[in-house]
Image (cartoon, rainbow, N blue to C red; front, top):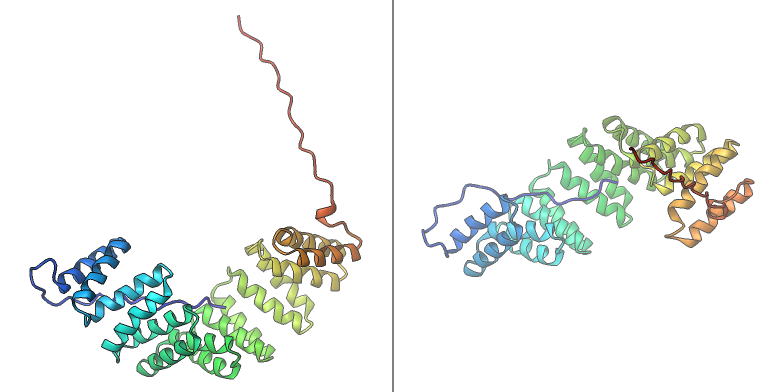
Length: 302
């Protein structure tokens, strides 16, 4: 799935004329904006915090604080800052969207949906808002609602591969496998170097018992990301169904190497699969001895 992200809005609108007093709320906000643009996030936060302490109605400072807290993964503070900004700018779709995603990152899915749906009403043509609503609905088990939102997202932004991938996941969860394949293929046509997309379509082909279609997708996935353990596991099963036992053993052994230190249960399953195929798990193979080269004495020149 397309990993969900905040709509980055720094609200870099032209600042109104502020007093020359360097300690005024307006001057502190202006200083904070300059520091944020320069990548001095901690200094910017300090200035924005000082600005809103002096003037709690400074919406742009609250919004900028929300962005910086989010960047630091302090989602509770991001929520608080964006809530202040949203109250001061109730008709700003970007602020409402950012608040929604702050809620989501803070584990408040219901509040996230409320904020994002408000953002969608304010700006119904924002594809990213539809995508984010759809992804949250899917995670909450509302596949029909997710599909409606994600279909809107790809209609508004048909060249966004992640939107198509997210739509494919929703179709797959709703058991609309042919539609899922079509959506994943759209994502791959836009970005064929994403291992996740190839893995996802391979998994649907596997569910459809289309082994010959699944194998090349899984092979592409592991070629792009050799650490994608799930793809190696599925690939092992596909090779086994094709009676290509040697390749299946190699795939399961690769999977075993990736999971053996993380999940003993998964490692045990891989070992069992390998033994059933007549192979030897990598965990039971003798370690290869490395040959040490003998040092040759150099003759001293006269």
